[in-house]
Image (cartoon, rainbow, N blue to C red):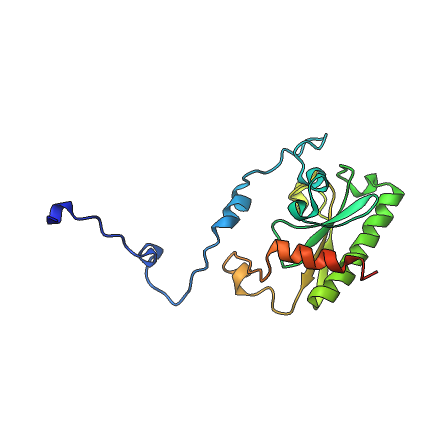
Length: 189
């Protein structure tokens, strides 16, 4: 093949990263969907396209549902902070904590307690973050539908990766986490 017809030389990916340094690269392109807001729901008042309204209508596996109650269900976070990060969510499309009925409030608390028991049994975390972010300005990604986060924590889980690298390292696939937590839900009574 003559030289002018030679295929172009493809530079290794490292050539595009700038000057060589001592840092490794962990590419997580699947996170761009979350960062860029692809497929984010409309969050209208009627609950159209709300993922928390849609999840209970799917199979537990497809909706990442761990357990179902009368007024509340537990679901894994699709974009978790840590493995086992789940949420207690009322079935009713309600945005503000004071809007919950007494029965919803009690079951939300019970599901949060049960989630902690189950996660302790299955994953042995060192602690938890629990919380409800009310409104977008407070950090709610889906402000139109109230949800209580239950985030297991381990010593050293916040290290250089999320702080400097803007990347979370999750050691367990969502489907595997859902199966192990759902299997232990009733047993943790």
